[in-house]
Image 1 (cartoon, rainbow, N blue to C red):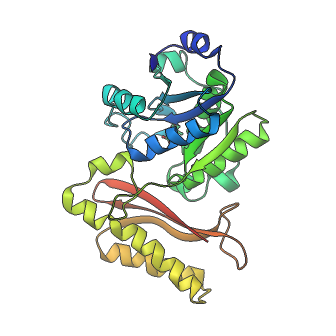
Image 2 (tube, helix red, strand yellow):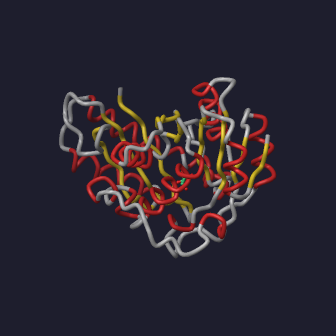
Length: 278
Ligand code: PAF
């Protein structure tokens, strides 16, 4: 496996590969990321190249968020990526990717990007789209794999790729969970042992929301308010808990595939999770 830090070196290394499977990450990898790498391998086959990027993207962090303290664990990440069958790690410095302030941005439409995560993290999806568009230009992948754990991100990036006619097939990877059911996340490392147990309440609450819908309740406002209150009662600070249509994240309606999504702060850690309703 090659570890490459500059764009020209990456382009040289990639020149011989036509099929390129790409997994963009911010590092501090866990089994969920490694599953995306394995999925990329399956998609491009043994002759294709699997590339993972590791770059903590300042553009998607608000000033009060954890950009400075976000764990940077390159050596351990590379060991794990090699074990998962990755061919090339692209780990640019900030000046390599942003040699001058990134004033050209990719701004996603408010209807998709200013709701849910985007409502609570203004500018987040502009930061994500800008870096992913740039990484796509650098890597020129044929396929890219993003985790469904960041459900809205996957949807925004799918739409960006389609609307910009980027020649990349975007795939979603299933969320990996601990044996207890906690969605794997780089930010789980911030949780104490008791918090890791309490954190399971988020997916339980989403399941409760789904169960009420499936039992025939249709007062979404009341259902969501109850879910928010139950997390508050347990000491959480929830941002949203909601049931939406999978295809555009609009409010749930009968007869369409749905997804329950939630984000909430437990102590100082903000967790997100989602469950698709089949
Ligand atoms: O999901 C992430 O880790 C990041 O948002 C991404 C897609 C790598 C862009 O920085």
